[in-house]
Each structure stands twice: as structure tokens, then as C-alpha cells.
Image (cartoon, rainbow, N blue to C red):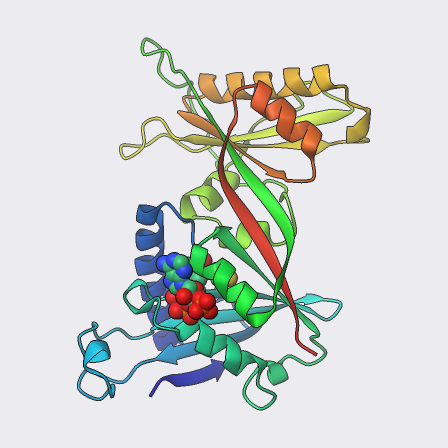
Length: 300
Ligand SMILES: CC(C)(COP(=O)(O)OP(=O)(O)OC[C@H]1O[C@@H](n2cnc3c(N)ncnc32)[C@H](O)[C@@H]1OP(=O)(O)O)[C@@H](O)C(=O)NCCC(=O)NCCS
């Protein structure tokens, strides 16, 4: 009843269908408080799995017939990350969730004939669950995937002074993204977070060696006069040489930079095993906002 199609490259129609599905999923997941997978259709960078449902009246179930007509009910993207590892991003259309579609899909992916065979040499598949969605954790358990990374999204609400507008913004606003807290972590962040992380650095090197902060602030606009700042602590030489006091000052100065630039809150992603940075971030007023989990599944 469900139709699966693998594609090495997305044609214009498929690409439009994927965009449509992701737009609906991003809106639904942001509303529910979850981030969402945001696979990049890309070019021939892996394999795309497109999942379709027959039109209403041909779905062999009155319950399914009541659900809307959509061009894709699910989409998975597999990209090669080297050393036998593939990254997977998977999203199910919000109207078709909790029906077992992702479970079916994972069974199919594990099948020798219909699954990963197009990805030569792949032994391990990894994927991020941002939020994480409760179904993603259940799904991971069900297929035997194990969690290998946990990244905490920490947010500092900024107490803005109403009498001061944001500082003038420099013109060219795009740049290399902020360094990731863990491999491929950015691939599933919300579009707003991804955009923020790609702004031109507002400030680098607040303290200087041995650690620097890289602070990005979204451009203010009519829809978000007081946007978010995204920041990362970057070890320029040996981050472990920085004292707690230096890190503390670095974070506080970074938040001050974000505040001066008009941000309403500052976002810092920290790997859970960086206990020192997590603890200092807490002291500086960052609060845990969500956890992102990376799963790994051995497929051979
Ligand atoms: C995560 C996601 C892919 C699951 O798709 P789905 O088709 O709804 O999943 P299934 O119906 O196959 O359910 C999978 C498991 O989650 C459980 N589940 C489904 N919806 C749930 C919910 N809202 N709350 C808690 N558990 C839920 C199911 O009972 C099932 O568990 P079981 O194996 O013990 O029976 C889908 O919710 C989604 O697209 N989320 C946003 C993108 C995302 O987080 N991607 C990361 C994937 S790793």
C-alpha cells in the first residue's frame, strides 16, 4: 500500500515534494516544541528515499482514507560520511505520524534487497533526533540503535534595555557556520538556528588565547526585531588551559556582545561530556532548553 522509491538525485518534482513535506514538518515540530530533521536534498551526495501513499479511496483502510492527500508521507536521506558511516535524516509527514510508517521504513532499510545496498561499504548508520522526539527514541530502541552523542541546547534569556536599540549591523551577513558541538549536529537543527549559526561573526576572541568565543547574531528585521544570538567557545590553541574564571568571563562577555547587538536570547550548544563548560554556562545564566541525541545503528 505504501510506495517506496530510491533516488540518487532528486528531480525538480521530487525536490518540490520534499520541500513541501519539510515545510509542513518544520512548522508542526516548531509548534510542538521540537526541532526537526531538515534533510538537504543536495545533489548526488547519497541516496534519497521517497515514500508515497495512494490517493484517498485506495488506501485499504477507512482511517487512512480520512488523512489528507499529500505528495510525500515520509522522506529519508542517506549521505556518506566516510569510514563506512552514513548519516540518515528521516522525517514523517505530521498527519501520518504514529501510524508505524517510520517503523516500516526502518525494517525496509534493514532488508538486504531493499535497504542500504545502494551505499557500498556502509556498515554504520547514524542519525540525530533533535528534541528528541519521543517517537524517535522509541524507534531507535525498536531497531536496535544506540545513543552515541548528547548535545545540550542552552539558552540565556537577555534582559534588554528598552531605551537602547540594536547596534548598526554590518553589511555582509553570511559566513562559515559556527563550529558544531558534535559531528553532523547542525544537519537537523531548526531553520532559524541554522540561519543564525551562519551569520557573520559578531565578535571573535573576546578573551583571546587559550580560548575564544565566536558570537553570531541574526539580522534584525520586521518579523524579529530582537533575534537570537548563537555562540560557540572555540579552543584556538588548547582550550583545557583556560581557567574556569576565563571561561566564565568569556561567556559573560559573549552574552554582553549579543545583548549590545540587540539579541533577545543567546544559544550555546554544549556536548554533555563537557561538564565544565556546562556548569560554567549554568553559573552565567544559561538554562537547559533541549537535548539532541545522536543514534548509531550497525547494519552489517
Ligand atoms: C520520529 C518520527 C520519524 C517517527 O515517525 P512515525 O512514523 O510517527 O513513527 P512510528 O509510528 O513508526 O512509531 C515509532 C515508535 O514511536 C512511538 N510513537 C509514535 N508517536 C509517538 C508519540 N507522539 N509519543 C511517543 N511515542 C510515539 C510508537 O509507538 C513506536 O513505538 P513502538 O515501536 O514501541 O511501537 C517522526 O515523529 C518525525 O518525523 N519526527 C520529526 C523528525 C525527527 O525527529 N526525526 C528524527 C528521526 S531519528
